[in-house]
Length: 259
Image 1: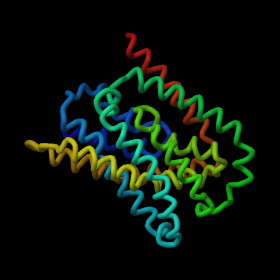
Image 2 (image 1 turned 30 degrees about the vertical axis):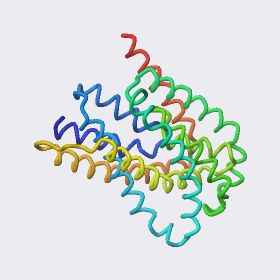
Image 3 (image 1 turned 180 degrees about the vertical axis):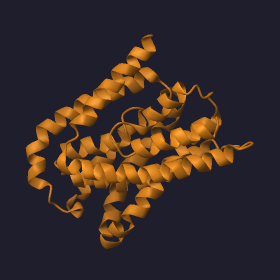
């Protein structure tokens, strides 16, 4: 793995992390397309560069959390079920699921269909509630959103897509569920990265530390741009385009596997 690989993967991570299209799927597919050899460093790199995206949320939403401290409790309520399910499923996901292209393609396809169906079904309800405050999300809704988020243990599901689909199903407005998904990423991604680094601590050799730092910095910058784009996009558009994108990407991956 070299610096160019780090730059490309950092850009992919930052752009896709908060969109409902699965950053993990894109990183795994990109790594395979670039023919980067499998290694413990690559596995840790693909997970740990999420720290850049985490930092972008902390920078952009620090004032929101300070002004609405009760959000911390609601984020905690959502994180707890994710943490329990994630810990119980960690070995399965890491050992058997992480690099399964058929599973990733299937998850992208199914998730895309569900996203389109939910968007169409709840479209009118969402328009009526788009002006509600983010703080209006209840503890019960937060806990259910956390359960939905735990589905992202399956590569290709997408943490963002799982929380968004859960939020739509619970009647949360588009803007609110997107921003709540951003905030919920803070403890979720930090815990996932910390757990992976604890389980398989990376032994950095040669210029691997520089490669990792470059990926981290690039993912931070592009994640800020990705968040701002997503928030602006949903002001005038819905999630159906992401659903169709997932379906098309899933079909392409299946075709790639068969060729």
